[in-house]
Amino acid sequence: MHQALWLLLETLGSLLATACLLRAYMNRVGLGARNPVGQFVVAITDWLVRPLRRVLPAGRTVDWASIMAGFVVSLVLAVLFVALFGGGRFPAPGAVLMLSVFWLFKWSLWLLTALVLMQAVLSWVNPHAPIAPTIAALTRPFLAPIRRVVPPIGGVDLSPLVLILLVQVLLTLLQSLLPGMMAFAR
Image (tube, rainbow, N blue to C red; front, top):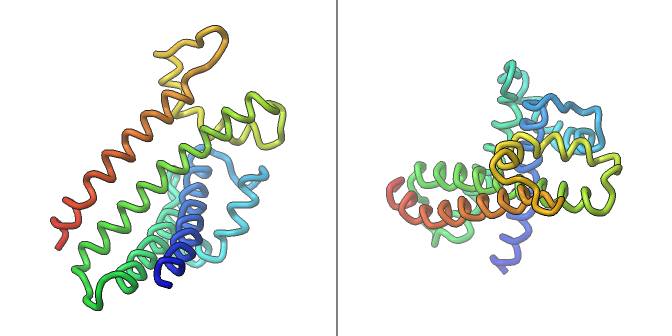
């Protein structure tokens, strides 16, 4: 029963936190709510970000309220994880904080992977889709440096493949560091 409940909580929490991070990133690259992705992200995160904006106003380049909203969601999720699987004892607050930061970073990398996959599929299937320019603008800062190093081969852009491979390596390294980080945080 705990596993099913955790699956539901983790899925909903990670999607909400990732949407908050996407909102912050969209503001960073200058894509507000004037596009379909922005409208969706604002609609599902506004209830959480708006109250935080009173305390943490948006900076010139960083949307602190959206980042904090994602962190709050990951922190609540980490506390729920410990409550469900902690064996009745409360861990050190540092362990819960480290777990929530770890999850936030992991979700950011998965968000990047999803955006790159969507951009690659859209470029093959329907490059003129209304969402395509937004996805391209979100992935461009990550793909541009790779495109300078890896030229198209036979007219095929391999930079999304290289980026996804690099992100997967980062996720693997991050996952291998988790036990050590948790032991350090206790």
